[in-house]
Length: 119
Image 1 (cartoon, rainbow, N blue to C red):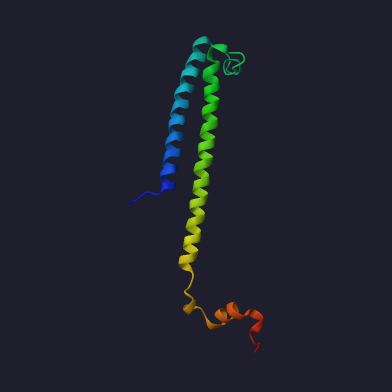
Image 2 (image 1 turned 180 degrees about the horizontal axis):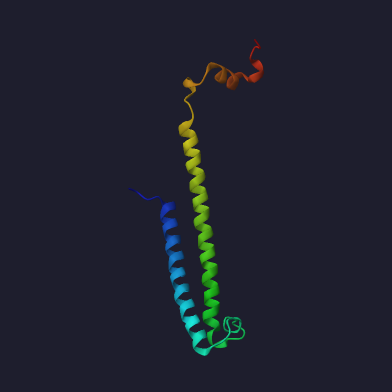
């Protein structure tokens, strides 16, 4: 089975997403362990302006969250595009060939509905 370039891009995006998620989970674990070790209040510890010692890690966690949101938006856009293409393909496949359409529908398409004679 061949994978399209679009599908490969989605796989790459999702790999980045899960790598960022794993890094964020690890970082959150380290930060929470450090917070509990010093017994600091959550609001104080997780404020980079008040916690210079862990400010870089706190900022990194915010960047990772932003990166994850951006990557998920790209994946969702890909999904919407793929879904739209699938619906379009299905509607084309479900359309009747012209020769199977009733004569009246073909006449209406060619001459307009107003050209039909009223019975």
